[in-house]
Image: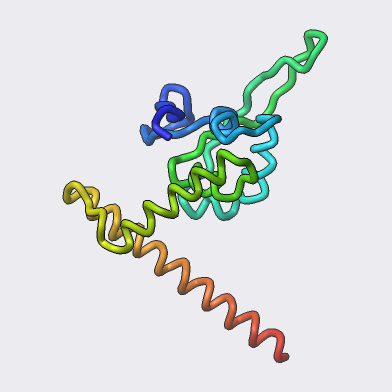
Length: 149
């Protein structure tokens, strides 16, 4: 994915590397690149669990010299991985399989953090996951009780 990444100069705020939505769509093999924006919008709530969903308005040529504003998204690596898993293209399937294999290696302890900062990031990601799971369980219990009333 690093070939897809852009720096903060091309993306809103922050210095974290992001990928522009249309570049990701191209890499995933979308026939119509702008279709990825529908997928991003459909999963916006989940994408925001990874952090702010960065976007900006850009002007495009709409034909016959007309111009209009559209929303362009800049996804973090985690957000791009999530969208890759949700995309329904051959390239997306191949990348998702690779991500699953890397995940399996990491969860089996075959991959290790390269330094203390990476180890801290891993612990923080695990803590966020535990919090999300706890909230999901709490919401499920609340829904169950509400159905009993």
